[in-house]
Length: 421
Image (tube, rainbow, N blue to C red):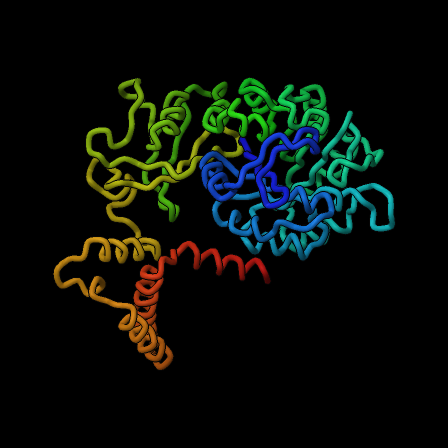
């Protein structure tokens, strides 16, 4: 997996050399998060918080709903981590706190990591093992700990789901990954390992993938030396097979079709913005919808844990199956809340004569919600409750759609409340 980094300092997206010298600065964090999310998870790092300064949490919050984010920088408490997860963070990156003993001095803070695992789950915990010459450094890379990188990593491995190793000496320099250390570290630990610092070429990403490491991109990405599309393509396990299985699903996770992909098809998918396949029958590139127009518009793409299968989330422009069915597995689309909202939105965009939905104005919708809320409260039987709940959901979704509120936003809020408890 290739992970794009969004480092934040003074409410700006920055790239620093050795964590100190400002090299570039941007102010479009939201756009970057949405774009980077097409290719994999996004690392959002609060550099100010890591340095013990004020937090950029207000800037980070909206990013957590735009992308699958792993968040780090100055996270010192279980409460902080839990709040970030409730706001949408997929994983939490812990740095200094995990490597400082509660009694003082440096060492693995097992008590904190244990409490954190109980609160958010070990699968969400990443510990940053940033090092200079294989000595771990903390406090924004300012403090030497005397902790040996390999030995400490081995002890951390059973306590977390992943380690993030940054070679501080090469961070922001684009002078190449320190493969000597990376190989030793990969051999020393069994957990997932992401490497960062000095990445300068696609060959390094490919070599990292071959030894089982993910790569986090910063300077090489922002300067244009490496594109995420190319990085994703080379990180797949082409040595296992030249043609890999590809699964396409809709945004609400309904499987649309399966096929196969090769390097060319992956590259063309990113280039065209529509999902392309390798046709085994014709032994050639094939874009779904070339003839019918029923293309699959790319939203995001992911590799599985072994990098030998690909999952694509896409928006279909029409029936997916050659038979005219919604998908190759179902005759019709399963009815979901998202599907209901799409139908309502279409009624507003293209009102049909006599359409009840299109005729609903804001005042009438609110009146109907009040009416249906009262009726579901007085419903007695199972069937009555089903009927009234359907009415209430329908009118509530009409109101949401008119106000520009998406179903996903409501589900995200429910997810936040669930994780908050």
